Amino acid sequence: MEIRIQDVHFDATEALKSFIQKKVSKLDQYYDGILAAEVTLKVVKPETAANKEAQIRLAVSGQDLFASKTSDTFEEAIDADVDALQKQLMKFKEKMRAK
Image (cartoon, rainbow, N blue to C red; front, top):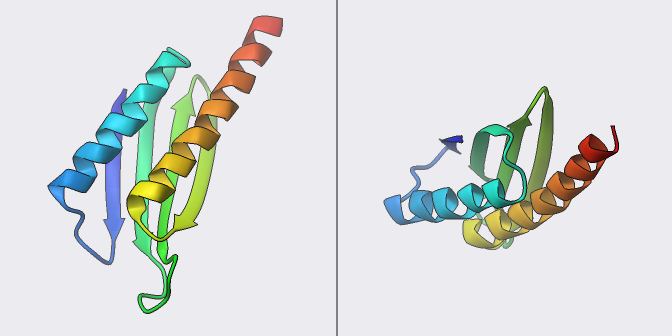
């Protein structure tokens, strides 16, 4: 699975990028057909709390799965996104089995 990380209006640290790689690559264990993952990180309204937004789009055999969360830290937002995508992948896999 190819993982692309885009950071909008700031530069992500290597530690954050490796954290994202590690978390997103774990989604492979739920479904083998993930072709690519695109992660977008944004800082929304820099002076407020819960201003870190993370979006993950997974390209899965002709379909896209998407999750977007806003939190205090990018790590929390990524964790929440990965949890949401894990549930989506399980449902997608069930649908594929039913066909």
